[in-house]
Amino acid sequence: MISYQLTQYGQPLERAETVRPDPVGTEVLVQVEACGVCHSDLHLRDGFFNLGEGKRLDLSKGRELPLTLGHEIAGTVVALGPAAGGVEVGARRVVYPWIGCGGCPTCQAGQEHLCARSRALGVTRPGGFSDHVLVPHPRYLFDFGDRPVTLACTYACSGLTAYGAVRKVLSRVEGQPLVIIGLGGVGFAALRLAQAVTTASIIAVDVDRETLQAAAETGAAVVNARADDAAKQIRRLTDGGAPAAIDFVGAETSASLGLGTLATGGLLVVVGLFGGELRAALPLLPLRSLTIQGSYVGSPEEMRELMELVRTGTVSAIPVRPRPLGDAQTVLNDLRDGRGVGRMVLTP
Image (cartoon, rainbow, N blue to C red; front, side):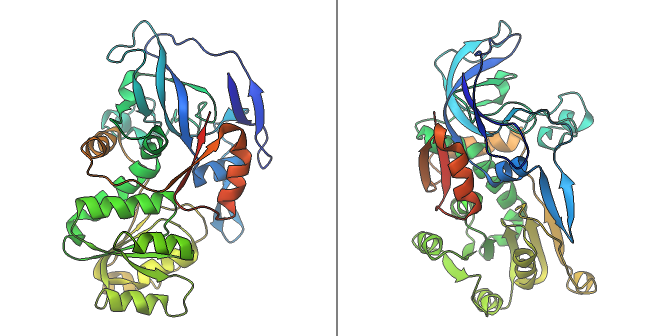
């Protein structure tokens, strides 16, 4: 089995050859056909999140190196453990990677992605920067219909994260403006999902001209975040303020811009993990009845809902750029430098 592994935080990934595992119990072995590359992979490689003011959240705790990154996985089932029912060898599936311990109250409530004892693939367990991955149970496998496998893999994080965030604003944006800040792989997926499941008018915000052009071609209004009057442009487009904004960057500047675009009673959903601190005038929160909410990937049930939308053709495709598995480190570099529209996907 060929994998590209994190062996030391902050250092390039290393190619490794290991024995292909045999599934036991309920385990399923999937031959990886495509694995998306996410900004979270960059943070995991670095070993920390930037909390602002020189503070860091250490990501090395609870992880053993070497670790194969990659959590947006799709491929073909090639072997089953003796207790793995409900799927057959040869089935093509996308993998839900946000696996919890299975026994805590959070998992029992169906919120495995929030489990404090995470077994997430590519995060604490070996992931998809490889030609094979071991999945603990068939319930984490979802049919992706006739969608291309390089697109299907992105639904495991990019699509699911976007869906989870859009779901949080649904009741506020029907027939109203929705501001989407940051049009990387996740943000662009949210743009397409919002257009599919709401009647909201979308204002798409980014710093890259090519990305903004791609958003404009979907029918969204676009604003360059680098413009000096970006906030004023958005407020004009929203007639004084939006009922909801979703920040897929998660930087100090993007969150501040999001707050500045809200109408009274508005909701800012923060998804991105770029880092820093959120600075806000506290009296304005109660005076304007503003809400700030975090959103982290999505539950297995949200994954089921999303894949039903995918199979019925409700969800439009996002731009995908396939790259060879051997380019794993180069793709991480490209992602850090902000190169590429949509999602870059490794193909073993």
